[in-house]
Image 1 (spheres, rainbow, N blue to C red):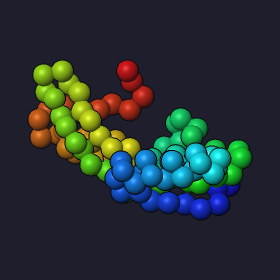
Image 2 (image 1 turned 90 degrees about the vertical axis):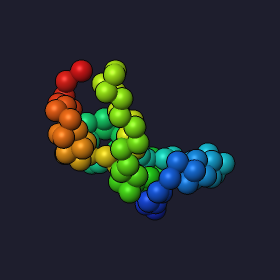
Image 3 (image 1 turned 60 degrees about the horizontal axis):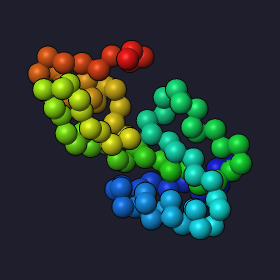
Image 4 (image 1 turned 60 degrees about the vertical axis):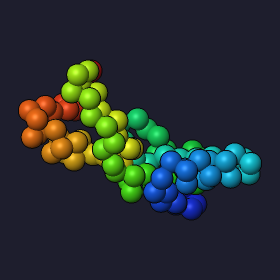
Length: 95
């Protein structure tokens, strides 16, 4: 398992931590919302776990092209709650 866990709260903090891991040749293990669908939390060589759950801002929504920009800690439930008022939803597991 990863040894330390860090909770960055901005892109700048992620960049600084990533640069430090790179310089020290330490693996980074991303953790977003805990779905595990991507398998990224598997720390096969240890490393630093980047728990990105604090980065949960829905940054931009474009109704014209049905796109939304979110930070990695945004859950499907939170996104759908945000979209509900405009009649949209983000289905899990579809393209």
